[in-house]
Image 1 (cartoon, rainbow, N blue to C red):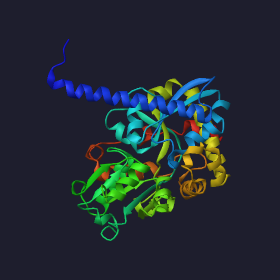
Image 2: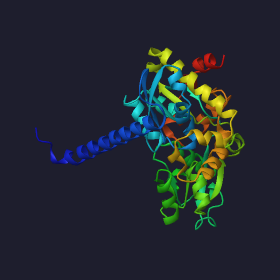
Image 3: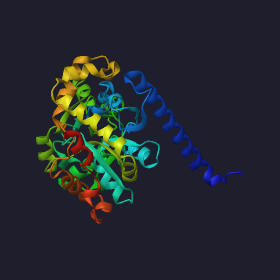
Image 4: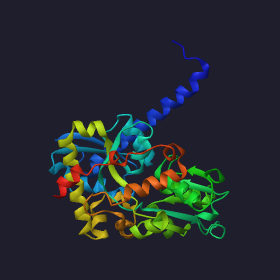
Length: 351
């Protein structure tokens, strides 16, 4: 049957997007298998990561490189998308069984009628940094100056988008008074900053370390530590985590326990090893030819990680406060925080 003309373009766009997503997933799958034991025997689980080479999501690849998935009898396939919101989409659509991304997506999804929960919490701070271009450094000295500016985020609807909006609103700038621009991370982010496509933006390591090394911009706000999170957001901000659809968790508790066991082992290992030792375990191409700079990036971000995978006290409440400040869907809805995460598996892993 012939497709009506008015539907042809959207249909083609959707098909192209799906093709790109599949291609990216396949590329990521092959690269992770080559890099660290993703193929072979064991129960197969697919996990989408909102940027495998981002230091904030480092536990995903490190767990594979340390062999902890295999030790638990799992064959984990790590896939990668440039932004957490795309990892969320892959999870909700059933492409993968788990997503490594920010915990705040579980609240956002709940008010949209989706039951998703964090099963192990990697961090108690966002690990994000707001940087400003050299050209705009004089006119942007705090989030109060966001009005009229173009602000970079990894993707619209991503956690960098959420946090940028909160910082603006908290400092008296309405979300309609600035322009969020999706620029991804890494080279695309740095290029956008250098070319003036954005005046400032939120990103993570290793992009931050590379940007500073190139002298392409300056740090405006640093949320890589619990102290930085407290200052900017008013409390601990649980960010990177493994979250899964609640129905899948309830139907596969043995598998989830094995995943959580592996991740908790990794978090403990990270807490007793140096940034250089951690860097040495990661795929060689993650350092982009500069091992020293990559180790520095890890060192700067290490304070954000938990040592045991436990949800920090008052963390969910901080996240809810942040989202309610600018997100009308959440502001006018009752969020059941108890259904956005579970400590069942972490308690067994650490016990």
